[in-house]
Length: 85
Image (tube, rainbow, N blue to C red):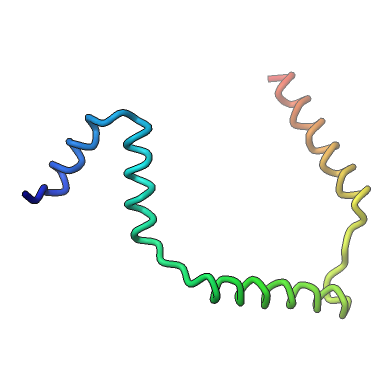
């Protein structure tokens, strides 16, 4: 027996949420075909490019203490804005 897409959907909606989630993820995974080697190669190329940009001075790094201070200031500003709202 073969179900139409709408019949399959309706049947699926009668399943418990955790079963629907499992079925949905398995169906999605069946559509996503990744070649792990090509993904690894792409990441290696991207990382190499970023390291080259740092070493050549094309980009400037920010000290971690400055990054953390900026994040803390942004978080404090958002918190203050929420308190005023």
